[in-house]
Length: 234
Length: 180
Image (cartoon, rainbow over all chains, first blue to last red; front, side, top):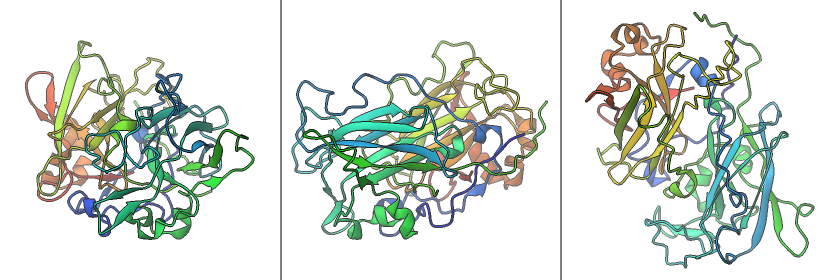
């Protein structure tokens, strides 16, 4: 018996052809996707556990010195949409430095690089689906999408869950960012409530006195269908 | 609870998603190793140089080392996962072994995720094998598609042990993409 994964409610995920985001124009497929019934390859997936380095969870300790910027802890749980924790799953993050600059050959933003900050990290969730990173708050940065376009500060998140169908790449934003209104990537999510699920919350209780502000970001992956289906196997 | 929405990986994905050995599902010198390479191209035929493709597949016996395989996890330690960023020419390269048939009527296949700047959600497609003519003809997905569309999902044979699979995001010969 195989139990598939439910599709998200309408309006949860962005359309591929979103006019406001210029880079979609030549990259969004013009034909509608074909619905593939979930079988074994789709309800299984990579269970990645290896190769986590000692500084991968703390982006402020990956170099000789400390990076410039506001030190923060980003923590939360990875759950499925039934509220069940997703344990032992890989969470990958990447982000700009405090000045809004990535150490990447294609980032020409006139903002300084930080020799003590690369901006990539990864952790595994624990048995209850909890994860935690220490980093610095990324800066907003300008981009060429439209006149005076600025990306709100964000951290990229990549998640696997336990099935190919659960793969998710998203971005975490910070509360009350005045740049939300003009950002087509944030606003590409049709449903307003869904959009708000990408915004972390400030967490005073988890804030570490005289050390780091804390932000909470729970990530919800697809949950399973209630009814399993039979598949013949030799 | 409700799902967290998808967002693009953006142009700087290599900072977070690049693994130096990610393209090796198996070692280059493993018995039966097959190289699957190709280009990711946009609607103007230009290479997508800021993308990553990920592959997921059964082992050569058609099994998964995963507890949700109803036949039981294979216990083989076969990872089955590959990841390769596209280079300055939009090219990717994965070293793997051909998956076996699962035994449910589907032809041997590899599931593929495409992520890139400009893709607000991932794209999903599949790689099928050119030497599986009969199995491909009976495959539920391939047989449901017009022949010219189905052909976009079948890799092309090259030198022994080498296959080509180009991914065209948009336009003429657009690759078939899937909703799972």
